[in-house]
Length: 456
Ligand code: GLN
Image (tube, rainbow, N blue to C red):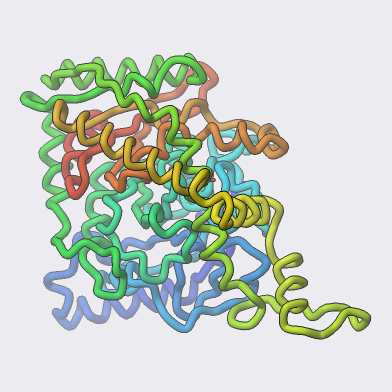
């Protein structure tokens, strides 16, 4: 808590610090421990954690970094929060993000700008820039993020932290504020690969309250990470995704990526190039499917049920419809409005087949690409993000430039497969780069071994 106090004026990773609650949780766990009731507590018991403000926490304000939820104090905990509490992990507070997790720089937060600890003139990536910066600045040893198109992995790359998007359905989404439900997934942010493995083991597993949750046990992730630390990858086949390199990727990012690939080879892995011919269309498909789901999910912020309510001025009819319009006009930021409008258009009767229908077909082709690739190799690799951390304001006026950040992370969300970003050394500009690993569905354990080997 004292590190948070020192770092926050320059980093601004937290929207809410729940210090008193954290200390009370720590005391409660100590008590359980003293009474011999914590014998089978997980290894992370007692380790504090920061939570992206996209995940609901009972009794602690949860905003999704939007004005529309300002002051909303959830009456319940997300499943992942219940699990953290049961594991004896104190909650340090809620971290900043792009409003409703929509963005790649955390500049779309309605509240504050989070700074990258490596260079405070630069963005930490997004949408989970708060969680990534909090971990990178040693304000928290661990954090949770949400990843719809890269919001755990891209900030991981830009801040030199580890970030994991688990298999879709591997971690419960109950209590994760919905952005695009078919893509959203909660996952770990940490400084080491083993820490993410231990954290994913705590938060993962089947949950009856999430209808898309997979009824299966969490794979043995920490064991895979510990195995990887022995740096023996004989028998492992690694695929370089041909479409995720070259044009648009910063030379320093590619250089660090190629060095990591050589390390995998030195440790005994066989590396081959694989082609995923439909990946160049994934960004286009994502920016139809995601806003469609956003427009539907965000319809619930109507001024009736949660947070903000703005009544129309006296000269405007005081109808429910007008109240909703004034509330949404005042409560949502520009980027959120842009996506609601895009999505509403893509789903509208006359255009549904041309836009949403086509995008869903592309999604199937991308899933096919992955299936064919995983017939040939165990794990796919690419740079996580095409560039290192950019300066504030550099991309805010150009949505396309901002969207291009997710070129390498989006395919995994469209296919529901697990993916991880690990730090991959500094680019020529002295800023962190990220190395991405992608594994087949339900095989999150396959990510952890080579990731831990590279880290060691
Ligand atoms: N940057 C992507 C977007 O703006 C991803 C967001 C996310 O993963 N939540 O949609």
